[in-house]
Length: 131
Image 1 (cartoon, one colour):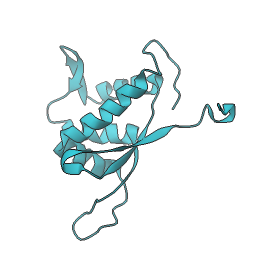
Image 2 (cartoon, rainbow, N blue to C red):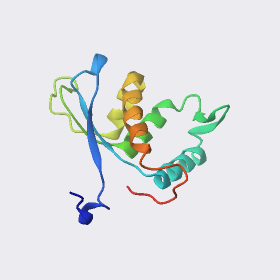
Image 3 (cartoon, helix red, strand yellow):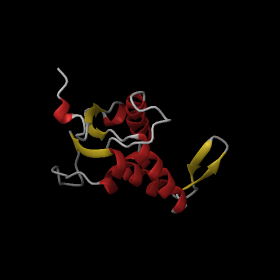
Image 4 (cartoon, helix red, strand yellow):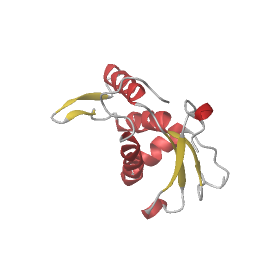
């Protein structure tokens, strides 16, 4: 049953990473096209993204900033076998997630795939944000 009182609520989904990060789960926030476009514009203005042959691409030397920005936009939380040195209770932070994405590009690719699957609900022509 569709609960109309919850239509405008922020939505998210948990995905489980594979490969070397198997067992780690990320809570991915669904971001509408309006917010994605605002994010892209901020990244261009900050010179983290630059024009490329296939649209925009990350500027050389800005990869860590790019992945941290993506984590801030899309990732709400993490859980699973994550530790930092001897500390096994590591709270989520976009900065740490950005470091993980930088070191394990396949992890970002898995998140990107989940995002692309959600995009079919938000056609590119739409201008309103649902996040």
